[in-house]
Image 1: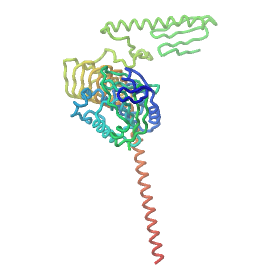
Image 2: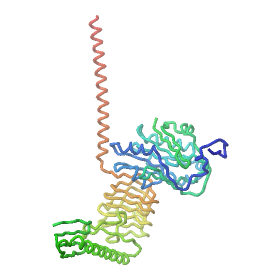
Image 3: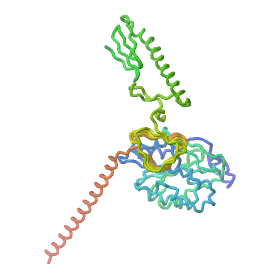
Image 4: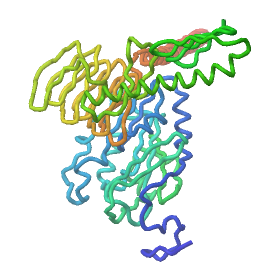
Length: 210
Length: 245
């Protein structure tokens, strides 16, 4: 155990990392379970990825009977502005596939929530709540470190069931960490089913619609 | 007669002491002594086959040099050479009978064609090349929908794509729209904002719809049953009350 410089309280060693490594991978137990569950479904599976499009994710998470939607919120030019400067940004305008005509079975929100203001998170998940059903899963990856890159990295679901990431920006900024309690407060339509600390300072959260 | 199929471009038939090697581009016939076959034929056969492949590579290099030079060696599917497999499945079609819309050109409206299309200019409208390949070049941009057998995106597209075979979004490609094709390839660095549907056949949606109807019918039946039970209970109570009176 190491002491955190900010609070002086004992923190697990993984959280004492200053920034996440440039590249890396970790295994997500929840994703493997969700992928297996989706493969059992008879009907066409619909997946929404709020990150950049990836052939690995498409090939490994999707089945031949699936529809995958990519939104790539991380590439939105408004996200390059600091949080205080994007007062006029409406997420509804940035999303082209939400609200969807049919509910999504899985929503992947990897490395995006730390880059959104609380009111943007509320708006995003309000929109998502109308585009999923009670059997859908929402999988989040959040950063728990003190500092992190200025823009979201690229995350891919690989064939061995792990998540591989690569940072795309060198600039490092303070990370607005979101506690589980705050997450519950921001997402009133959802229930946290699972919250697990993974490697390299990331943790995963699985949400279900209330 | 033994017949061994070695690969798609290379076939061999042999009897005990007579062998015919059918190698792509011709065939070679050899007389072999009894019992001589395995030890003799394979050492002879392998160099012959390797020589044919080397010749093909040389021919292909020459073709590429004549056609501009900077392309990688690419095996092109050829109707005259059935079974000669393409080694680069995602490569754009080689230059041949291709209509080209050049960089300074801007077009509006619906375009149809019976030939492959390379777009390096700008199009606002719809491209209908159902039996052919459409390529949006690195300098090309398109606003509207594309219907083709095969679609390659190296430039920008704002609109939907529907291909009967495959869609490839190359490294420099930037797509804002939906893709419907049985095979979709996204190269690293490709940008896409939209959906990918690799099973455009409606049968599963029909199953889904049918299941929904069954669910609704089941709910309706249970509602009717409940109503009937309640009606009978009320009726029985009334009869009891009448009997008491």
